[in-house]
Structure formats: structure tokens, C-alpha cells
Length: 196
Image (cartoon, rainbow, N blue to C red; front, side):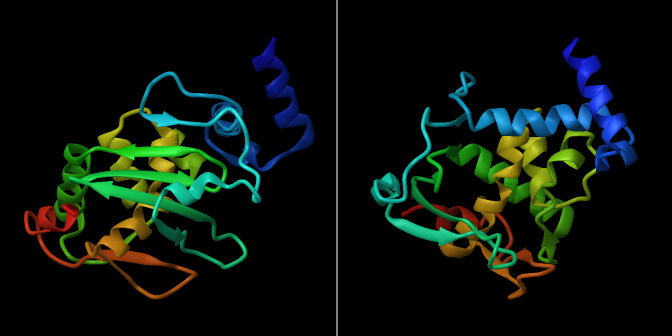
């Protein structure tokens, strides 16, 4: 019944989902992302707090590295991160945490190098395109390959890119529209940058 209802919503309201190859699947993926903010994940990979963090009581301060996502200033989001021994923990302004273990970070960096060398690569983390596997090659698709089926983890590319800049592994092209990154050095030299 829920699928039937969603199908009717798509076709009767003529949303932008109608134009996609699999409109129902795309809407389900979008709803999944909304629902992800409502509770805790049991998979242990990406964790969400059970409440939104108020600006006044923002516990982001427990993480010492403050950053902002790239893109137009009106859409940029504040977040903080910590890293130790190659492990990275990112905390968003809404209390969601993303964890990237050292092994996964090394796989991500190696995949970037294998696909792009030291050339520029895009964010590429559109939720609909990630869900349908039609997104172009970029950081989001590489995260999805390292974390198969974990769309929220792949979308965390928005946060991971600036973290890698801050650590000294990525270089940003300086644009807020059409922003891209590139590796500053070839693997395995980057591994030393992951350590404190």
C-alpha cells in the first residue's frame, strides 16, 4: 500500500522524480535519507543522535577541528571532526556522526589515485544518482564502492572532502560552484598524513 501511495504521489503531482529512470526507487531513497535523521542506525557504520542538537547546546565543541562543507555559502554546513591513527570521525551540526576507519580511508585514497591519479575529481554524491548507480565518477561514488549500499556514508563525501583538505591530503580548486579536489601526493605517501 505504501508503494502504491508513493507511486500515485509521484505521477499525480508530476514531481521531478517522474523524469528519472526509476521514479519510485528514487523517491524511496530520498525518504530514506529524511528518515535517517529521525533515529539511530543499528548498522554501526553511520550513527545519528536521537535528537536534533540546538545551536545553544551544540555539542560539536567536543570535536576540536571546525570546518564547513564546500559549495555556495548559503548551502554550506558547519561540522567538526577528529582524527587519530588514520581514523576519522565527523560530527555534523545536527549531531550525526560518520566514522571512517584507517583501512577504509586508505582504500578511498587508493581508489581515487587509481581512477584520477593527481587530476581533479568532483564530489559526485547526489542521493538519487547514488541510489540508481548513475552518479558520475567522483568522491561519493568511491565512498559507495568502499561502503557498498551505504548511501548516507557515500553522501558524507561533502564532509570528508574538506577534512582531507584540512589534513593536507586534498587540494581544493578554490571554487564554490564547480568545486573539485585532487590528491596532493601519490599513495602511499598520504598514509603518513593520516597520523597525528
